Amino acid sequence: NAQSLWKNLNINLPESNKRQIQSMIDNNLGIALLYNGRPLEAMPLFLSALQASQEEEYHLFPLYNLSLLLWIQEFKKEACKLYLTKRGYKDSLDKALQGQTRYLDLDLEKRLMDLEYAKTNENDKAANGSKMFLLLDICMMEYILKRKL
Image 1: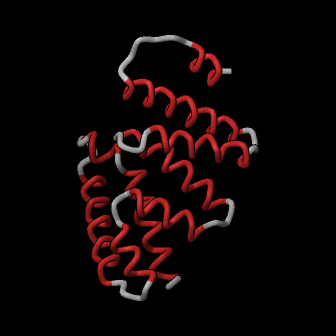
Image 2: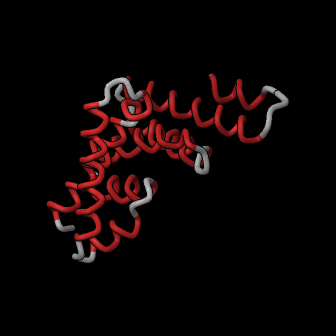
């Protein structure tokens, strides 16, 4: 399989490139397993992909996939906590979970404005590339705020 092939190759690459490739392999294998109805086998691959890419910008894809997997498996609070923490909203999330929703409300308003910008600027590739993350930011924030967990 792709994982064992990759691990057995002796390629001279910088460590960050190796981590990126490993993350992409694990993430894509996780997607293939999900597609084939095997979510429990996909979860450790998404976790591995996320761990391999923690400090890199491409960590968003395994984070997105793992969060959605947790969500559809009915671990919604855990999905929100993981996703929003990794996206930089830990302080706002912690306060909201303690009943102080003002900061998460403000973050939500900003994300809604960012989404409106992305919608009205279809030619801005950066804005449009981040739409799926904006939408999940909004979904997770609204869930926390409405549920008052």
